[in-house]
Image (cartoon, rainbow, N blue to C red):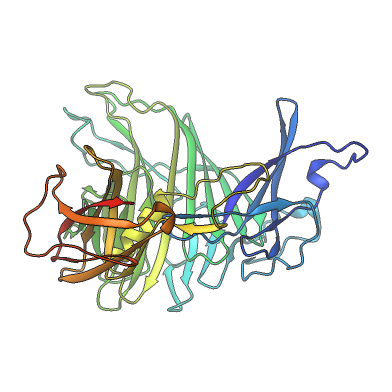
Length: 449
């Protein structure tokens, strides 16, 4: 589900405000569907509306959809819905009996009206509450670590968390493609908004944290820090963390801070149930019993006295899982989260490409594409992949014919020199076939006609 902005294009004789017009979109296949109105506004002499719509885009590819002013032929029926319908009386929307949350075919999310944190997160596939009302934590944890030298490098123990002041909780959007619950919170001089997003057809719950941080550390008071906790309703939680080209399990369960890249997997390995926490910019995580925490901000004071003051924005995602979640699947989720769809607006025009296309397709084998670049010293394409399952595999990759006909494929090292291997890639009519060793990193140099 993506959000787009449509700007006004006044039509003489039509005085209907932009926000009151009906918008639909036509998919690449020609199906006309509803859009979801998000909001409207006015900037620099022009009006706009923001719309949400669901799209399907192939990996390493693109698709075209067209916004139109017409009634759609297909209704916007989805499984996404609020857990409590909007109140019939508009000014009673925030009555104390209101429940904040939503659900789709994969998950049910409910927000704690007192703390603003997650009251319940249910994985509908397994029927289990990954987060339950029996074990609640604050929406954000503000603590002050004890003062110590080298505060930028060393993390100290801290006092008990100070309570956050919750200013408001509102259900901003109610579907059919996007549900958003917005929480406004304050602590000392700092203020934050935390938005929980549930989208149609997506098992991941999105969390967007924005705020202004005005807390400073010093050698007398210590280091202010902000973390987000998730109290998991699981026994014997084990964690594994993404590292370059793989994952590592760490037996740290007493709130020790450990590093990770795009994702952390926390779950019960015997019951094969847990949650994947993905992020777009943070690297410090800690497990304390069954509570997983992500570090958001630390105001260390040496060598830089004020390194964190100002505006912050962090995006997280919670993906419940049941059954085996492989390294490749976790990395795919982390990559998709960190490489959001890029929306490019354009006028209507003709073209030679199909309305949907994919540059690269992995036809067989389990590998992760980690890089794609032009060769340094010739007119060729270099593609890098790595294997995560720990076994030798045969990989087959196809390329879009719009690139031209694939002529040669050779193995190279990271400096793009020919690599000495027992096997060499085989160019076929629809791509290239090659082998990978367990946990290996492979670079292919490809030339096209």
